[in-house]
Image (tube, rainbow, N blue to C red; front, side):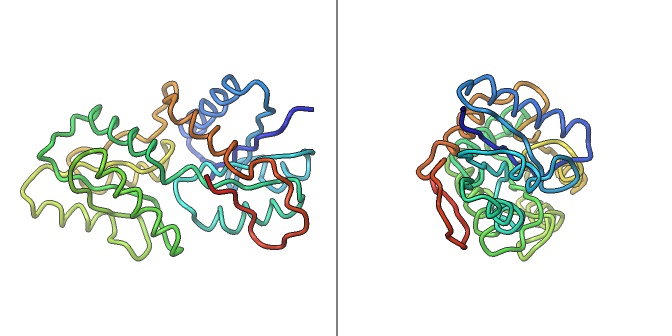
Length: 241
């Protein structure tokens, strides 16, 4: 029996977002033919993660295709994993150096210049760990880009994206938003509407997924603790890379 890899995303109402996610799942499936690849969602789309856990069997690694350790990871996904002790939850996809590299690629593709003011834009981040992860993502992007990166989110204690764009204009340069979002959809549309001069495409832009992202998904799945049953431990079961 093959091991099972469950890829869990937020879910999207936008057809382009669903297509981008499906493209990543199919790319992972092609790359890892020794694994049974199953997709699942926290909300909006079916099947929901709890249903997938109940309907699958054997050792399973559950990779949250999220860019920060937010409530869906810490509550919804971990709670679903508790339905079966053979399920191990890995660290979410981000933050990671790979995503910073892809983010810089998106900046170049959008025509960003070295003298632009860069604002990393993230979805709402309210949990302390999610806020910390967004900050780390900005630092990684800054290191790869080679210049300062500001942060703006769509909600939470960090500066709101619209305000961050306004503050960035004080530097008297073009403002470029680096979209820290996985797929196209409503969240990315809000980033576009924030008033920046340039907004980059999501990590998955509808074309073939960057091979580095595919490799990152598989690295998460095969990280320390992947597929390791954890018995009756009542706490969150997270394998850290």
